[in-house]
Image (tube, one colour):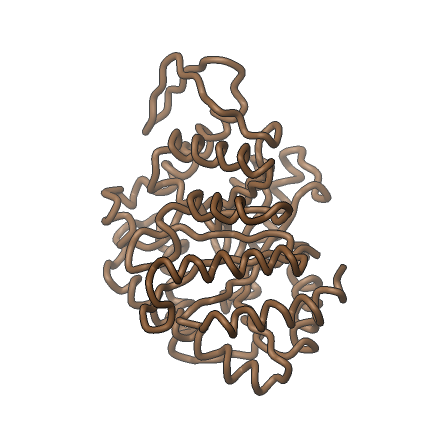
Length: 351
């Protein structure tokens, strides 16, 4: 079992102070995560309201400069909202400068407001996602100049630099949570899978994972060569009562924050009927219902965390857990304490 950390954070001035202090605390946590033996740290992408990072490769490069071993991921890079050439350049450069440590998580994004901010028609979301990913891989693998004739991007005699250090290209983790079509596409291309175990539709998520595995095999890929990663909110404390008391409020704060963003613009694209609306409903349910012990969060003492991870291994078949931390205005000191306790008391059971 691999363990990663995901910063899909929401900025709270009263808790985090200045932007400089906010980012400094995150990078201090990353240094600790490397020392404690976490496998990777991932950074989310969003473009409004102090949510995640407008430029994940910038903070990932700052993390790379302070570390030597820990891998650097994106959770996720929003392909439809960016020009794929820019993404290919920035992340290839990150891979080169970090010594080949990039884990490239990709996704479509499902907030209507984000499309409005970036001037992208949400009806083009899936098309831009698939074509953009194809062009990024083409940039990373082409030997010499190439042409590209797509619906959204066209290139003539284009040469790419720099090639990523990892060959043929860095591992790609494609998102698929409750949308079968995304799972089929990820499996067809042989990408690793990234999903959301915090979504209160466990049976649906497991079904989508099964669809992904089937697509892998149908297109000639080996199951043992692919990772199934999944995201949980995580907070670990010495006792169950302390963990619930300290950790739950920040998870709920985050869900309320996210729900407010989603409410800013209603979807009108048929493409989002299942993809966007289903996940949005899940966030709203979590924000209103509060702490749900029905295996949606890893918020507890070390014994509870171990039990949850063992359950996730068996139920989902996952071999890579990625934990969202530092959300909802959670103080830096509490984040550090949780990271330490989890590494000391939980991780050894799975190494």
